[in-house]
Image 1 (spheres, helix red, strand yellow):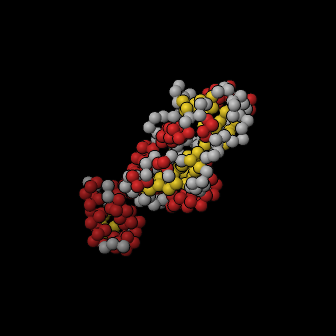
Image 2: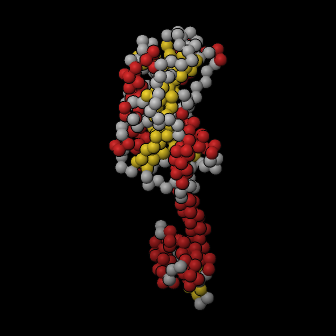
Image 3: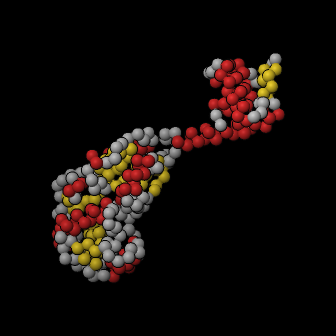
Length: 309
């Protein structure tokens, strides 16, 4: 149904005059008559009776009027829902316990009036497809390919270099260490059952293992964070790697230790991805916030894979 015709019908019904309706809509009286006639033809009924004093609703016009007004209200709500800044900014953070979720929480604390819709997509391919199609506004990802190879219209900005830490139980040889050099982990078993081949985090840790001669074991079922922590806490030989910004909570009796890696410090390179034709004002505010607060990007004392340099 032609909403312009419905809007014209309501204007005539409200004013009782084709001429006044035309003036209110900033169109000609002939255009008003044409729209009403087209609507009457579509509905198969007469909506107005023309009188010397103007236009009066017929019985069918009276029946149609409340539905016409509701149509216009619904159309306005639909348009308002997608006007820039009126809907929530939808951002993919990979996982709600990971550093990108913390970056987004910091942004919300700085901009408490901004409505956010936080989602978690599995891998970079899904995130890129969602950014391209407009089903999300932005995504935090590690780019394993140069930014110049991104799909047309998609842009990326390096926003956070997250130090990687060793997580051990109290009986592990490095449990009491203040820091550990990555190459000293060679020969020690690092267990990361959450690594999934083909993902950007699997690519990162594969390059880390190759660079420092590490043994990263991804075998075995991934039952989640809690069973992993239980196993690490009870083992003198197993450890795992976590990002500094990963929110991990464990029972006090586990006595787990987070040991920083130094000389060099491996950092996980988080980037923000978005589409250039996205007009949402909160997206621009998010980019500005991340530019102002971003960490890392230096070269001294850190390690990143070659694809992140």
